[in-house]
Length: 78
Image (tube, rainbow, N blue to C red):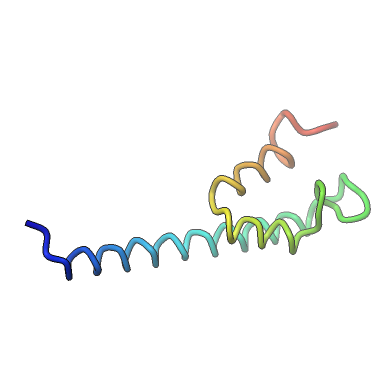
């Protein structure tokens, strides 16, 4: 069946890829949040770029999606 070593290798690969995706999204959100000018004083909704970036780093793609909805979708306040 499945060798335990095979499972360990695949879990390491999946964890590494997931971590890289979280880091990439976190950097992208940080850079985008710095450019937001519609909301004072931070330029982004609720919190500043650092906290959005940390939230995406921990929460991943779902939090990045929430960031997009709040800042770039048609649901954003005008």
